[in-house]
Length: 150
Image (cartoon, rainbow, N blue to C red; front, side, top):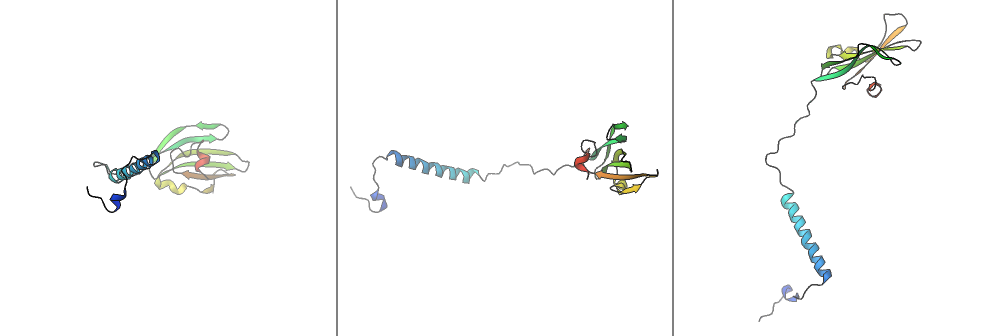
């Protein structure tokens, strides 16, 4: 029988102890995990659909009330109005120097958005009108008004 020279000849073929067996199992586990990640980690599903672009709603939904006060809520004509996307919801505040605040809430089309965020005197002496526009569904609703308007 011939003797082996080099590194192969220096290894013992005696049984491994429990510590060496555990190290060998960890080494095999690491090799298997690395191999699996290399093989399976780069697979791309074949019939994957491309991501869909975010669909914007066709209409903006706004709160509509023809006469409202903070104390009494909507007194006349509570409803929902729809306006094309790109338009706005609006709340008009009609105030006087005594602190009275009457509101009108509605939809505004793109063509009417020049009405947004202005202050002017009212045709009724002693009153002025302040308008606020917002651009999310029901942003002019009484519960949401404070969140969406300055």
